[in-house]
Length: 80
Image (cartoon, rainbow, N blue to C red):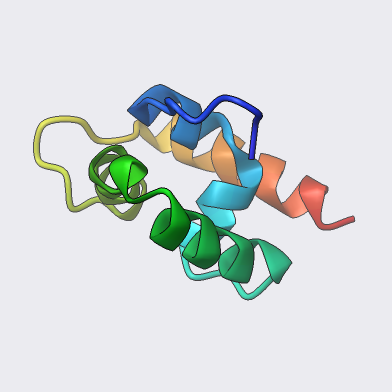
């Protein structure tokens, strides 16, 4: 996690480790974010909004197909 604790939705959506967490991709990032969100409960609301966008549950903002492909490619590259 970045050193700033005031993460906004946009910050979560740019954080590859959070994306892995939100999409339930098994990794060290998942456990890291579980702990961080418990420790910093004030982040939970923004994290839930970001997670809803990533999982398609948010009805206001959804990712365009190109955005989804770019995100998927970025995630896969981070595991190499």
